[in-house]
Length: 170
Image 1 (tube, rainbow, N blue to C red):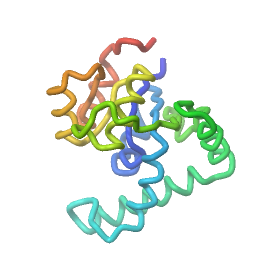
Image 2: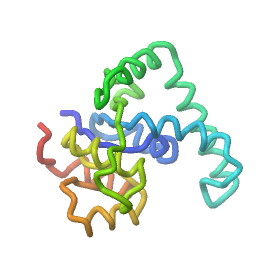
Image 3: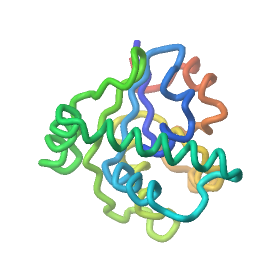
């Protein structure tokens, strides 16, 4: 039984454990978060606290970009971009991990409380009936305070999230 989570593409580069889960997982990634990978890969700003960690993460981001640009994967992603809210065929990342790219669109239903990427995560989560997986404590807090109809897990609780029965998933 494959578990489904909505997350940003950069989370897969930063948190390697997401790519080798104990159970089969599919990550739904909003397309705009793939575009963010290009910005994060070339930025001079540090993504991590230590220089060594920052360099490692930027290497992993580059590898993820290259993987998404491979012809078959690129074709699957481009197929999803033809229709708003469509989802690409799954892209295998490891034996237990698959990624689907969703052509999300920020329709601003959450006003100023959430930025465009956060809004797309929320909308993708609602459409897919799958929880959000993030490392952004502030985002989790705003989702809870706003009583939004989505489940959200901190990445530190990923193993727990794999074990919890989730509504709307088989």
